[in-house]
Amino acid sequence: MIALTSTISSMSGMEKVDHYISDIARDGGHAALEKLYLCTKDAVYGYALSILKNTHDAEDVLHDCYISVYQTAHSYVSAGKPMAWIFTITRNLCLSKIRSHSRFADVPEEDWERYLESNARVSAEDKLVLEHCLRDLADDEREILLLHILSGMKHREIAELLNRPLSTILSKYHRALKKMRALLNEEDR
Image (cartoon, rainbow, N blue to C red; front, side, top):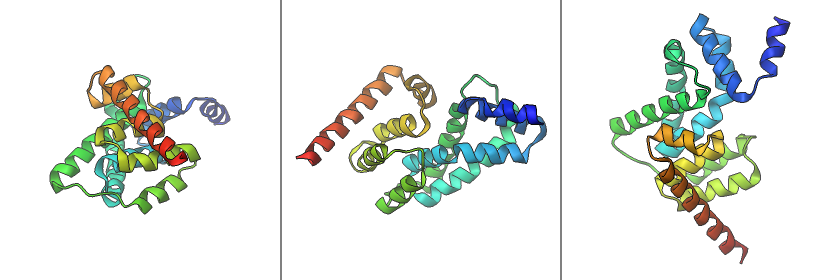
């Protein structure tokens, strides 16, 4: 047990996520599901919130995502991208919720502020950028930027997840950054 604990502690974040999913698949481990939830919930919730723009719906998707992960962990094939698999589940659940509601709602600014303040992995500068994203970016730009910032996904991984060309992802990401720089420069004046 001690050797296993030291092995897990020496793993990178993605290796841990991969390991937890494998544990869930192997023996339906509730402890592994809890650990997976604790290390990925902020990114999953932030991603769901960026798509749904409704805190209650994002919380529902967060819950449903981990139920789905638990039920389908046996079908997961490790390719070193466990978060892409989890985000695919999240995105599909979000799209299903949008279809079922056939509506969009704006996220109240205080909900995003509360989420960002509770997320220790997001720096003060990232919080500022994200707050501006909510107001001034197109939905697809916001989604790409949040995936990159909150989850640390590479542009190539985002392109695969969203099923879009890498050049489109890079273009939208750089356009979003340019908008953010312009907004920050306006505030400095």
